[in-house]
Image: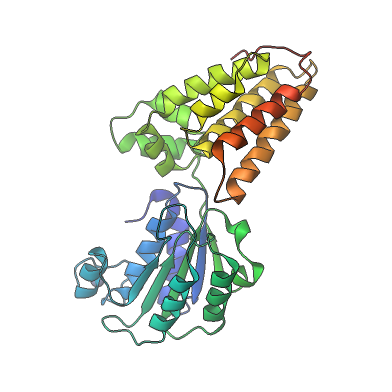
Amino acid sequence: MNYPWQTTQWQYFCQQKTQQRLPHAIVITGVDGVGKRALANQMVASVLCEQADATEACGQCHSCQLFIAGSHPDHILIEPEEAGKQIKIAQIRSLKDKQALTSTVSKWKTVIISPADNMNINANNSLLKLLEEPQENTLLILVSSRPYRFPITILSRCQKLVLTAPERTVTVKWCLQQGDFDRTMIEQVLPIAKGAPLKVLELLETEVLSIIQQLDTDFKTLLQGSANPIYLAKEWQKYDLSMVFNHLQLLIKKQIMLNENASPKRYWAIYDCIIATIKLISSSNNINKILLIEQFMVSVMKQDSNHNTALNR
Ligand SMILES: [Zn+2]
């Protein structure tokens, strides 16, 4: 069963499978929480399944049972050994060794690398060699929410599959079906989740709404010039920073729209500071959270404080 917003991509895959022209490598991209891994798993299960004619994995055969149990000998999952860390070259090298062996249970050999954008140059080169010499009946799926981090040499050897977040109404409807959630809460979280349904659910399980309220207040004091950056940095570093700055981006956009006829220069400058910080967060693995937040706050406070308009929400 795939998610309702993935039907087009899934049908395209099934069509390729039926016509026996599956690519050797696919890169699935899209924002966090749009179900990339679920789709990759579904594709892999489908090619490993012994009911080769069916597009959907049967879920019953020996191969399906092994895959569900996470112990299929012809499937390899490569993830960072520690969350947030890089995938090591040794992991890609051992993948190369295993790919040289013949499959045992299924006719196919499959690999999922997730997140695949988190590799150093040596690991990328090793992966590239693998992509340059594809073997018959192998499917390698790269999963990434940051495809801009891939070398073009890797991207150009993969079929690209972009999973976009569904329409707002589809996400809200789907989330409401998943549990006892409040529509207003879903709608509040939606922009922070960039419309990704699984991310909405994940955020609703956290204290995201109270964090948002706190951020609203903190940002207001920051704009008024009455914030204590050291205290705020200490508080904010407890939160998911990409969530924090995505929310600040929404707040400042709102502020720019509200003050369309006033002097919005200061807000645009702050908008720039937010974008620069978001870029830093997404491009680095080892960030000093406190330093990053403090630098952001100082750069905001440096902006023309003559326009001391409070953030009226
Ligand atoms: Zn099966």
